[in-house]
Image (tube, rainbow, N blue to C red; front, side, top):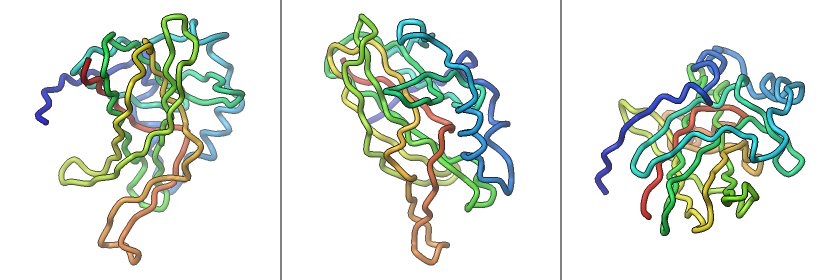
Length: 197
């Protein structure tokens, strides 16, 4: 499928660019979890969250950093990114995540987001732990992508740390095992694209 994308930089949810996610020789998730535990919850309810409008066919890239807002999802704190979805039926949300801090492979990590869909009333409709497919290509690098079917009643989507995954593995001929496992963390670089409908 040929995609024509408009890339947007979303500073309102990105926090600091890649600075907090780039620290050679340090596995950052423990530090980010400490920040998460001491951070103030941003909003009293889903209704108070600031949502970025996501139009069909437009890709939005963002960095979920330790400066991102924090919310409690099912009794569990998480940094997050939130989007208002253009209405329609048969919608697919493409979620892409990219490893960060990978100058030395053993120190890198990747955010493996869960997706929570909300209705017009800001009440959860469904929470999905997508199955991410990994890929690598020069010069783009490595990424993982998932296609998530959007419930017809969903108006909003919130991406947050999916702690059901310990990480993701990429094929890598330079590794003795033939693959490189990158551990998950509460922060990372993600993008979303709304298709269909």
